[in-house]
Image (tube, rainbow over all chains, first blue to last red; front, side, top):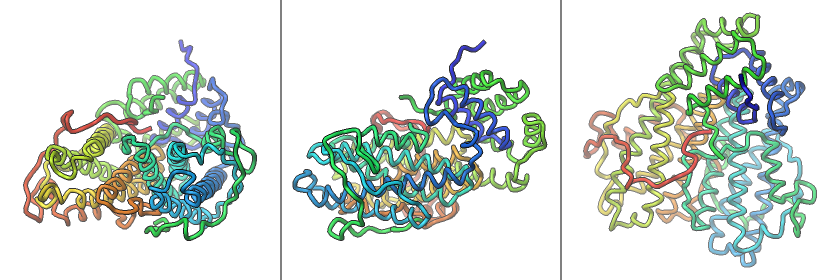
Length: 250
Length: 279
């Protein structure tokens, strides 16, 4: 009857239905596993071995917060560089905005560390192009889009893990990242508020990491785009920060 | 790349679920149960109400037994699930009401913006209006029923040359962001991962509106938060806050004003936006 090839999208649709339908955990895991095995496309989002399914929520939560804190460290490293060399990176006009962005990313980093997150890298390969005038705001737009997606993954997975407060924290951070996205688009003279719902096109943290690496970033190793350089994370100097409020999650 | 709006595109997504179940060699009785839930939960006016009706009912244990051959391993009691379902319904009803209020207000503002300092932000306001309307439609498709579609709007929400608009929008968007964080928390406690994510997707957009209001008001920097606001922790608290500034839901409010009724926004009050359904 069906010649349909199961895709990762189909697995997600099934997962959404199962999420919203009372289904015993055993049945849910069995169905998702069978769907994933049957999927036509091999990807990190689909190839879910029994061990991963059985690993439980704890492993997934740890992976997510470790990846998130790494992304925040990357953001602080990048932003501090932009601000410190504003005349060369072409961001002088919006330095007050970027300092506030940097402050919030550093607040996110500290909050995630307080939850036990351990960065998978604190040394990053950043393509030189990311620092060129005219390319900064498109870079920030790309990064913030990925960060928002990552925190939507976090909301989803923290809910599945029974961690409602963590889900809300992820929502609080995601909201601020969305503000950064709007401002980056505004700086590019694009319509800043261009979406009714924030983007959730990547469904796994591994997919987010893959997207960052595809963009040329290296997490603790050389990235895929050259020329570039290694930069190491360190707490930002006061000169690269602005005073903002709501510095810890509620 | 199209949005993965499984909850919204009813017929297509039910077919997708069926395809996956058939190709996964799922037992017929399990397939019938899940398709029944998908159809009831996704199609038209049933929406969330149908899904929630199943929470904690005998359906759960029957379905569990049918699917796995064992007794249900659900961990929630019937009364807990019923309470959770009732709270979720209240939340989405209130959210839909707030979105209807937002559309009503923004449409009026946009109509009056020409010749005022807000005129240069017309496209941003129209985009915001389109988005609030998308939120309204999404919540309705989940089974939300607005508690009012006629609102008392205080006169000072407009003011001379719309001078009252930016402070009003700052307050409203702050409360909307807060409301959706309440929703995330509540949906997460109920184990509703997709709903929690949808609430977060909306909350992000409301936060964007907030930062643009700050920019329009000349606030430097406009992005002044490390984490978005969660000072109010209950939906009734949000409603009280809105009533506290003079809004009336289906009744006169506490400040001089007038009634305005919700209607879908005219084409002149919106612009095209993306990601128009949750994923």
